[in-house]
Amino acid sequence: MKDLIIIGAGPAGLTASIYGIRSGLDLILVEKLSPGGQVVNTFEVENYPGFIDPIPGWELMSKMEGQARRLGVEIVAGHVKSAEKDEDSSLFKVNFADGTVIEAKSVIAATGSSYRKLDIKGEKEFTGRGVSYCATCDGAFFKDKRVAVIGGGNTALEEAHFLTRFASKIYLIHRRDRFRGVKILQERVLASEKIEPVYDTIPESINGSEKVETISVKNKKSGKESTIPVDGVFVFIGFDPNTDYLPENILNEKKEVIVDKRMKTKIEGLFAAGDLRSESARQIVMAASDGATAALEAYDYIINSGA
Image (cartoon, rainbow, N blue to C red; front, side, top):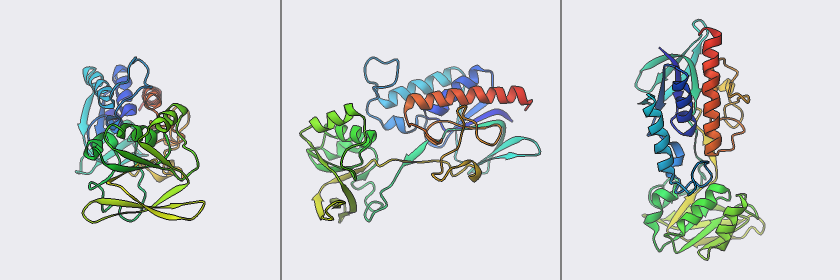
């Protein structure tokens, strides 16, 4: 049995493990894939404190992981299917896909979120054959080619600007009449000769034979439909929280975990941190802050409740 199980090894989970291990808790950090979360796919991070120059996302997360391991955090690979509290024993049972069950006095859910899909014809069929959710991962495959980027928030603007390193033309398609991203990102995008904003427009289908050849779009104001020749489509329209293993009664209508300002859920001993929680700003530094808060609260819960 453990004092604490942290599920998810992104910025929130890694920070929670650092604070937890330094508090003397017997803990493990569980990650389904590899430590780092979505940040490892970010080309450069320039708003994380402590770095004068932008730092590659993978390097920032590698440093966090290295710090956690140096302090003695045990990071294990595993797919968590459920995390439930036994009311008789007041212990949590964390059930893994391979049948393993580990008990703990407290749990921090920090599994972040996944890229939201367009849910249009051709998206699923052409994923990996022109449809992508990661410009850093796949941008180099589109050297001197035409691509579409779907979205208007910070991630879409960042990824569109990154793609100017490779693509000859980028159509930045957004359903509103202006982008939602921060001013500095909008300025970068609008200053690029390679990027053509396409406002008030929604994608209808992604088309091709063996690979992506065109994207069909519709202008929301005029109703006009058109087809744009592209070799790739990059989708950045938001995120959906990874919370399918958690009890329904702690989730809101968006499937986000409902927490208070101390990262507590309505279930005593269960905390949530990072992008999966309600009202998350989905920023690395804020996820790290959530993780620190959750770990300190978990420590207090264990000490004060006699768990």
